[in-house]
Structure formats: C-alpha cells, structure tokens
Amino acid sequence: MLRFFRERGGDTPLATCRLFSGLSGRDVQVVQGFLHQRRYQAGEVIFDEGEEGQALYILLSGQVLICRQGETEAPIAQLEPGSFFGEMALLDDAPRAAQARALGPVEVAVLFRGDFLHLMDDHARIASRISLDLARQLGDRLRRMILAQGPR
Amino acid sequence: MNRPEYRYRSGPLVWAAVLGSTCLLLFLFQKMLWLVVPFLLALVIYYLLLPLRERLILAGLSRAGAANLVSLGAFAVLGGGLALAFPWLATQAVGWQESALRYLQGGLFFAAQALYQLEERFEVLADAHVSTEFVRQVAELIDTFAAKYLGSLAMGVAAWTPLLLLAPFIAYFMLRDGALFRHFLIRAVPNAFFERTLYLFDQVDRTARLYFQGLLALTVLDALCLAAGLWWLGVSAPLLLGGVTAVLAWIPYVGSVLGCLLVVLVAATDFPEAPQVAYGAIALFLVVRLLDDFLFMPMTIGRSLKLHPLLTVLMIFVGGAVAGVPGLMLVLPVLGVVMVLGETVGQVVTDPRLMARHLHARQLRRTAVGRDLY
Image 1: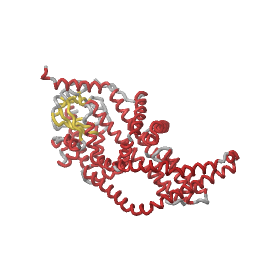
Image 2 (image 1 turned 45 degrees about the vertical axis):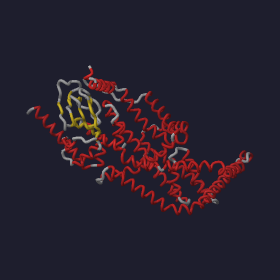
Image 3 (image 1 turned 180 degrees about the vertical axis):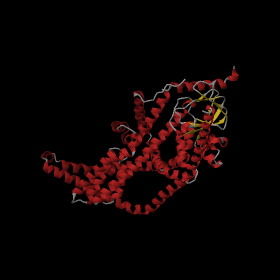
Image 4 (image 1 turned 90 degrees about the vertical axis):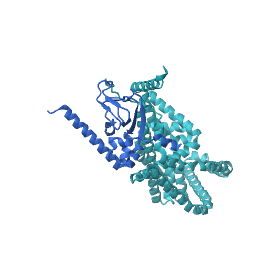
C-alpha cells in the first residue's frame, strides 16, 4: 500500500521549471515531496480572480491562460510548460489578481503555502534558493511592466 | 467581472452540526476505544518526536531516514530503560503491595481523624456516627475489592497491553509516511475545492499539533510545580507523584480528584502525626489547579483551540455525559478538529462559485470522455 502511495507520486519534469533552476537533482527530489499533482480539463478554471490564494502552480504539461475574470479573449499571458503562476499566494494573503484557466488538458504541480513554510523551516537552503528565483522572476516582471509603460 | 467580496462566518447551522458531530464522534469513539486509545497515544508520541525528526531533516537527512533514526532512538531509550528497570521492578513488586496497603491505611486514618474532629465540633455528625460508618464501609470495600474487581482488572490489563504496544508502531508510520498519506487523501478532492481543502488539512494538522504539544507542555509545568511544592512539604517521591498527578490531570475533573487523593494518601501516610502536611498538600494541589486553569492552560492548550471558556466547560460536561471518562478526555481535541472541518466544509458548500466550478469541471470531464460516442 505504501508503495502505491509512492508510485502515484510519479516522476515529474520539475527540473525544467525556472523556479527550481538553482536546485540540484536531490534538492528537486526533496521539493517534490511537498508538491501535489493535479490534472485539469480544457476550459476548466484553475483559480478565480479575487479568490484567496493558498498555493503556487507549476505547469508541467499543457497551456494555461491568465486573464481578467472571464475575459478569455483578451488574455494577460499564455503560459507554457516549465512556467509557474499564482506565486503571490506564497508571499501574502492577498486575493488572486487574475483568473487562470486551462487551455487544453493540463497537468500542474502545486506548492501549498503551508508546505512552503515547512520547507523554509526544514530545508532553509532549498527554500532560500526558491525564494531567490521567485524574487528574480518578480523583478523581471516588474522591469518588463515598467518598460511596457514606456519612458515618462 | 469581479467576484463579490464576502467573509465567511460559521452560522448557527454549522455550529449545530459541529456540536452534533462532536457528540456523535465521542459516542462512536467510546464504542471502539481499543483503536482510539492506541491512536491517541500514538499521536502524543508522534508530536513528542516530531521536533526531533524536523531537526534531523534540517541536518540533511531524508524524511524516512530521520523518522527511522528518531524511532530507533526512542525505542532504544524505552527498551533500555525497561530492561534496566525490570530487575528492580521485580524485586520491588512484593513491596508495592505492602506500600499500597500502608498508604491506603494512612489515608483512611487521616480521613477518620478528620471526621472525628468534625464530629467533635458538629453534633449532627456525631449523632449520625459519620466516622464509624465511613470506616465500616471502606473496610468492607477493601475486604471485597480483590474478589469483586481484581479478576476483571487483571483481564483488562492483559487485554489492553498488546493494544497499547500498537501505539509506538502507529507513531513510527505517522512519522515516516504521514505526508504520503496526506497527499493520497488530498488526491481524492475535486479541483474546485482543492486549495480550500489543502488549507483545511493544514489547519487540522496545526490544531492537533498545537493541542498535543500544548498538553505535553502543560503536563511538564504541572508536574514541576507539584513536585517543587511536595518537596518543600517534605512528602516522599515528589517528582514521581508530581508526574503521575500531572498525567492523571489529562482526564478533566475526575483525573484531578484522583490525583489529589493520591497526593493526600502519601502525605497522610508520611506524616501520620501531622495532618497539617496533608492539608498543605491539598492546598498545594488547589493552587496548582488554579495556576493550571488560569495561567498554564490559556498559555498552552487554550491558545491552540481558540475556544470560548464557557463552551469549553459545557462541552467537557457534554463529553462526560455522552461517553463517560473517555468523553472527558477526548472532547476538546475532537471539538477542535471538528470545528476546523465544519468551518471549511461550510465555506465550500456555501460558496456558489466553487460549486459552479465543480459542476462545470464535471460537465467538461463528461463531455471529454464521451466525445467520440455521438
């Protein structure tokens, strides 16, 4: 029965995710112990805008659309495997800023905020590397937003 | 299209369901104590060893490796302690019977003396021959105790010992595979409710961890305070008495009375000519109980469960009425967990958007699997 639990965890292409680029293979294995795998149908809502976020999502396969609530024809971003979204939920209790919706059949790995806090307590080195990558991504996003607004 | 902002608060229906479910669970638990007691002991061991496992994980061990090492260490300490203590216990076993009788007689002498003194002051008591009647009834109880209760007591010990040995094994598997089991359970939750359920599991785990770690901290504080007081009074084996009394206090009210009785028996026997020591022990016990209720309990267990004091007291009585002594012991942790469950299920069921998303996902799944059928 225990083997059943373990095998259902499966091997995931987590190493391709930008969030884990600073981690060794063993570190990724450790993180994998904290992740939950979910599958979504095409068109299924992963989370809603305004919902209280509890987790970060890592896209393992398929495509995800990030848009304003229900405005699928004018997406904010279209994410490919290896991307992650909903990362602000790890940092604060603020409501989700946009809706995430599966474009086709999608498989994601989910890192719950409570588990991330456990990771910080138990594996501070791994958690600090993930936090650094997270900060880099957020900085990059901020820079791109400023550039998109154009010079003053 | 923004979702309307609203903050969920449990209504009377959810609260009624929480209280009803708590009573039902207590009733069921009472019927299968053979499983509940080892499981509860396992939880106590699990939360006692959890910080050690976390330390080892932090030092670089895998979760399974850390669980194995901590469990092996705990078994070695326990087994070694028992192996060392066994020869001493075997030699002392005969003496225990004599000691128990001596303490019982000491306690009886103290109680009879106290009643004689009362009879001297109050004529009504003297007319009723309270002290004579008390001594007669207790002597009768002692005479018939072995014939009436010793057989069933021995059978009970024989039946419970193997079950209690289950506790360390359950604790070991909790330490090693608890996270895997949690993942396995969460996999069954539909996508729409997934994040809320994750939060629920986290809250239940947090509540249980804080409760049991609070209970252990409370026991240590109680034991130390009582031991210090008994040592100051000059009563023998203060640390052992303090420890046993603090563990007995896990059973609300009944445990405290038993603990007090034990302390008074020992104090009255150690100082038969000085009843003020036994009165001092009673006073000490009351002071520690007050400290426990108003200082230690809010600092440890109360902080974890966030229960209103009135509800706490009421539920302890309800627990006792529904499931007796096990109900008294189990009512607070069960209520704490059922409260978190009730609040989260209430949130999920009363959120129309989550229900709509769940139905939508089911519809999508049905369409996807039946696409080639039409």
